[in-house]
Length: 284
Image (tube, rainbow, N blue to C red; front, side, top):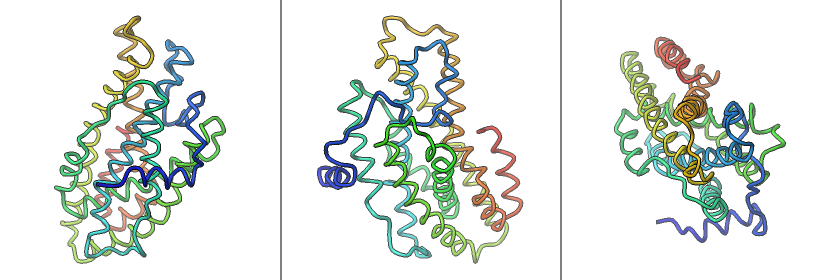
């Protein structure tokens, strides 16, 4: 069991013990949160939903970092120069603690994490390595395309995402080498099977994200006091539709369509790349 106090202390040393999340500012850029189209919500309610999405965003990253990524470090073909530092894990722990103290109500997240990890890790190691590389290039795209130049975001949250981006930039490079080493002795049939496994992992995560959107809507109802003035059936349907497409793009589409991910995939199996490109529009 990790030492949570030590983890938070390390994060506070980087962030500043006297610095806290600013709940008056958004946590996610609009291109990922997609709360502005929900015009029937007040500005404050849209900000609350942004905060809930920011919480889920980091919790899902933490799930992958803590329960799936260790698979990469333990693989005999690992091509890393060293191992992952504790920075992201510490920052994620700090954020969860800060969020729980400042938000004022609970936000559920899919899980248990070990069950999701067990499902992902039940696939061929090459399929899992593709999923890990997907998340790493996805992180790069989020920061460069949406986060880096967004001046509205809470600076503590933005700084946390910047450190995560810097970590994943190196990991994407070394994990590409790992994936190539893992696939070196595989036939084209085996490589294509690994891509099919990766797509099944994406489909599994899509189902999990559908559940997460439902959790987020429940959390929004609690935080915004909407039990007194519930959303209409049409409003609920709109929130679910828009937010589901938002999380699909955030966690699935933005990784599946990243040029560097597709480049690596095409070198592995051109037919597999075509399969991924055909599936990706559903998540964009």
